[in-house]
Length: 504
Image 1 (cartoon, rainbow, N blue to C red):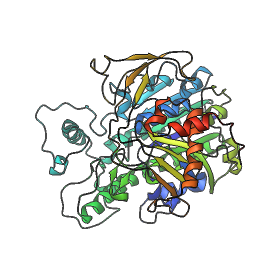
Image 2 (tube, rainbow, N blue to C red):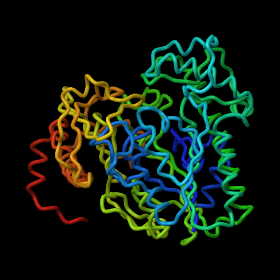
Image 3 (cartoon, rainbow, N blue to C red):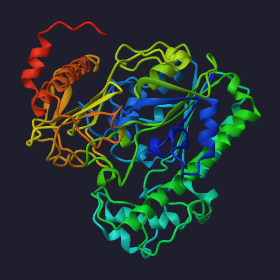
């Protein structure tokens, strides 16, 4: 058996034709939908980039115990488990966060082999002492360091054609692996590109798919902030994203072509997924992290082809999550699933839409804790103080750096959690790295209000979903202070002392 996973970053479900978008140019995603199953209620777990990738390895939620960080010594890693059981695993990526001080070192080395393509975003790649002139638009304050903006413009100068862009090179290497190993058995290939994550760098070939008049400043790297740009600039930003999306579609088509050429559909699972979406003005926001995790961000595109069942050209409406993918791949290759893995095997869901989970959690460290059952989405905001909040880790690193010595002065040793395999962990005062913003608790019925424009005021429904959310938090051994941070201490005590209700 063989498996390919193509993972994009910040890929928007609502801008793909298989999910109803009529203005983007993405014929290969339409082609993919005809050759696989399209999941309508696929939800993220932990956000953003590296928390999601920790879930892709471990099959369990990250965000209640940890922010951005590496794999922990006690973590189970899906590609490593494959490798240890005779299944060759290979990673091809241009996702440079794998190789930074913060998350670096522990992810890519879990694969049998890996290849890294340089140059995305502010990857400190090519050296240029005298900086280039940077367009004025990047002077607006964002969460990105100005040095990254300069480095990005240096990197772009080394990519004068689409074929020289990082994304294209990633797929070149992925296809090289496929051509080399098409006749071999027992392998897993992960082709992972940073695109269409910002900045939305593309060449004229793909921009020409979206002709429009625009005379404003250069704008392909929106800030993580409220929209303040004029409507024509917002529209231009959306077209810049769409152009990069169309490049992603073109590269996806190259993989589909090779699968057709070598009839890999016969014995090769294909999964196409992302870590989260991206706001392009929806809810009056750009990007992610500071605002609630609306469905534009949390309800993600997912396509799966399983040669065992042969389902294609159909929708699957059961609730699934990113943490289910590692469990599904392990089962596909006949590898036992670790006890700590919370993800569910999707074999039967793929075959005939049999539900394997009623509900799920999602969120970012220190921000809203969110619950969904596919119809209702509940976003529980923290108290104004947003405390207490702690990181639990044996690998004290941030997004791009190690914890500084000042942060570690008050470190305590906390007892093991259920999933740390008996290891006590460091307990370090946490910080919300992107800022949770000033948002309230929100409840939506996304079946009748898919755009989440009309929050519900329904005390009975809220009480029900709070109870269900708390039970999921208990199941993931959430730190006790999370309930206090969310203003749920009394509700937690009531749920924790009651027997579990029968599932409907």
